[in-house]
Image 1 (cartoon, rainbow, N blue to C red):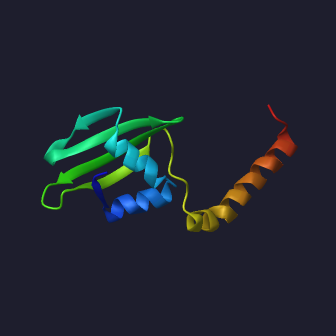
Image 2 (image 1 turned 90 degrees about the vertical axis):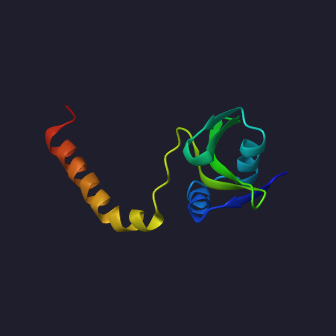
Length: 109
């Protein structure tokens, strides 16, 4: 198993997207497909179950390690931040009430 280092950005994305560390390592070590990117970076792609993992990494020869820059699962949106949900909840409730009253008054046409 090669040594793997995660950037702060990658760590945040893993947490935010609720990704599994083992799946990221499997994508990096046994990819279904690789793509060369600029500046010596590579994209590793692997289908695991129903999820298509993408890992962008760069090999750091001085550290003999892969530096993981970003990770995501194709087709999955980032879940909203809990603070954002709390802040916007009164507006979403108000919008729901406006739609509900409009349907009561004017029907569902």
